[in-house]
Length: 294
Image (tube, rainbow, N blue to C red; front, side, top):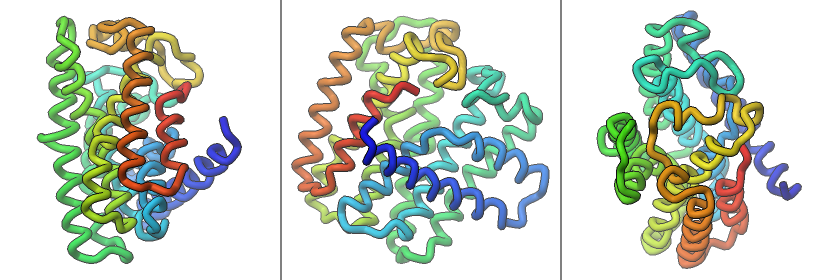
């Protein structure tokens, strides 16, 4: 990995980790609930969504302190979704990032409620952000509720479950992942640019990049589930096959998936250039999203 990117990722991971830790720790939350929430928050991960948001904000001249609460809120949403995805009624996973999943560490009821708490706390986090205007807060909460709820991630998750064991066309698979994975990644890019001060024309130019990033991310995830390293992934490989999920390699093969991913990466970069983004870190992050090994 490029040294400048490695330093950037480490620096921004530390920022988001510290913010999440301090924010949740200092809230008067029931001890057993807080312990479960922090267990999954501390499990870590690459924090790619909040880092993407911060990079987009910086690209348009915004300040880290203004975007950080919203980036933390997005990571709370992502963490809640993972807690619930791992439940026996969903993907029934025992490991997440190399550790027992939340319901294995505690119990199912606690895991469900910890996820619920992170979901709702995310909106509170945005509303308490000191560097944002009331208009900005309303806009960001509205967009996050759309991206994460019945018109976004939740719908995509149900569609994904309903497609298990079925052969579905590529366009259906892309619709599932546009909702399940893409909406939150799109939110990261668009909200970061919005907080950073991007104008309407620039925001419009970013829409295609934002939409494509989720698909790029998911194609790489599907490839890793077939050919990745379990130690690096922090979970067993092949879980998609075991759960009879439709995947890009399952429909296109590995080579076809790589070809499609590279096509989308090039399209995402083209639309990013049209937004007149001067900060090359966003381009570097797109490459990182598409080539990460875990």
